[in-house]
Amino acid sequence: MLWAGSNPTDRILMYLAEIGAGRCSISDDTVLAEPDLDMQQVMLGLLVLHEDLTYASQQRAAAEAMLRGVAEERERLLEDRRQAIQARDQFLAIAAHELRTPLATLALLVDHLVATVGPASPNPPAAASPDGQQLGLLRRQVDRLTRLVVQMLDVSRITGGGLQLTPVPLDLRDLVRDVVDRFELEIARRQVSVTVDAPGPVHGTWDAARVEQVVTNLLSNALKYGAGRPIEISVHGEPARALLVVRDHGVGIPEDEQDKIFGPFARATTARYHPGLGLGLWIVQQIVQASAGRITLDSRVDEGSRFTVELPR
Image (cartoon, rainbow, N blue to C red; front, side):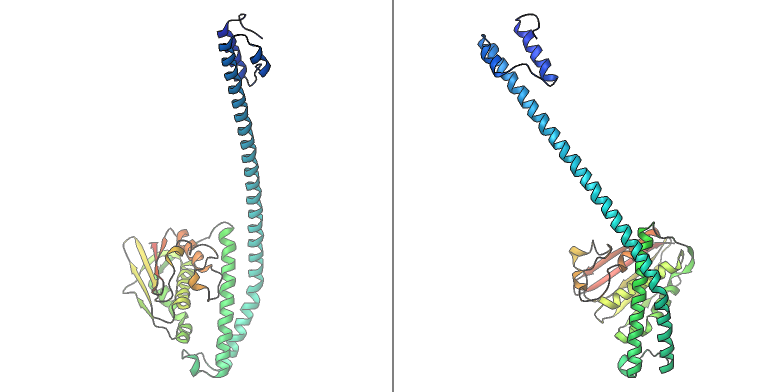
């Protein structure tokens, strides 16, 4: 097709229109057959332009196809991951529910045996009878399994739609003291000094069971990783918030691991010799965040860790 006969400008415009439409009537033969050398050079340049644009279009199409493939593969992997997580959560929920009843029965049986042998005593294990020592060890293992079951249930609840909180008025100072009293035997067994600095009541509206879980997990963490050194707990109130600080002087957490320590199943390298699932601090953070608060960590290896919980009142 020729526009206006042999007018070079019209021919160039025609070729450009063809190239813009994705085709080109120029070929090596038409270039060689062109008698005008200047026009021959123009046609050659237009042919190269067409070939470059065609190549670029092909490359773009190939890249887009590859990106679509990557996106589809990513979506497939995400769906596989969602299904795997859902299956895991269902398993954890079922396993935890199935384990609660036999563990509760076992705990009652151990308590009965302890009462038969003799009343519980906060004395160090060395002062207890051999039977008492064995029963104390058994009771601690039952408690540990019970905590693991509770953590498994919490994972299922959190990943299944978040925590359901029931805020009620309470005194954080009394709650912390109750938790410390509950750890009395464990504290005595480890021969650790635990002090509570709580000069006055700290009233607020929080979910009592969940806040108790926060204190329990932090104190349990301090006892586990505190290397037998003193633990300090402080509870103070400010006009708009309550502050809970749990400080140990144990193994500490490396600086490059502190950002991820609140992740699920995350464990610091300094904790590798201690059993656990790595869920305690994650659950603590989830509870604190669900309560519109925040938790921060200040830690140094071989100097210990300080966890600070801020809760709006």
